Length: 448
Ligand code: GLU
Image (tube, rainbow, N blue to C red; front, side):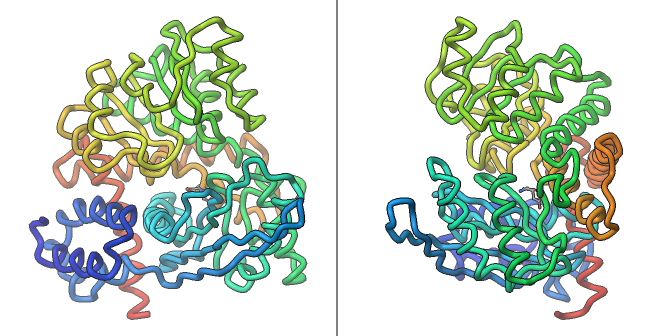
């Protein structure tokens, strides 16, 4: 129950319409927690039905993706693009290929993306897409045929000024390459319609590193502001050995932090003296699991199942970088018991609402992914700028811009949290600061 009648009514309406979309509903509930602080102060929000309009995607496309596997068998998947909000720029957000993909998950991600992209300060609206296709274990040929089939439908809905997809779980440079290649062929045009491209055809340097590096820049800002210290010597655990986790580990190591625990989808390793980061980064780049081999090669214990790490590892800072729904209230309590005083999300919504409430009520500093993992999409925005300028910036130039953007995002979230009397509540700060820009743009553009 919210204080505001308006919020209760809008939530009831969404539940009546889309009650079965659990992930989406919970993202809206979390966002409305913050809106309860603003809707009464700004009557325009209700008068112009802003929340009713912001929770409904502007367009959703859902289509069949038939393809032929290496044995000649016809396989069928479902593809989606959820174009959530274009008030501040073309729809922008990743494509996710994973068995778990459904409309609820993509709507939750697209909704979050709208505010994340707003926080970057770059002109990007929010969108997300994907398919219930798992690229793991598929040959390059199978992945290519799948991507090409998907693109025969998706190409009509995207474009450099309409909707610019990128990678996400299960979608890396290989998948982007196949999708981009087919888009170019179908449209007969080269344009910056995808980001996360290889550098040889318009990709940005520092894009592969951006989410993980950006996460650490955000952590540095939090430590400076709240604890008057730096990451040097701090004990950190990271979940997920994909792009985000691997690059977060690399930047952590460069900045002198100590990685004491890390998981992949099979299990985790923990060493209070510090793990061998170059070993882990090399494995993460090969897209393989690392934890079992790590334990064998370094003669330490391997723990089966990634989830146990939250209750086992003693750390000061936790960086969940795997996927949504990894951390529940029980895990949050164990983390706190084990000495963790800061949790910064590298993935999108790895913590559920109860865990976030627990952190906020128990003095664990918490940063939501829509702020702390925005480095990826921020550099995607820089890739779009480079493409339209027909220029390529150096790694150092992009990295410097990324660092500044992460500092600015932290500042916006922190200042907003302070303004609303809750200086430690960065979730509140991120939701309100992200929302304000979208609100302004929607009001300026009328009912459309
Ligand atoms: N999938 C990433 C995210 O969740 C990146 C999106 C993009 O670069 O467009 O923000």
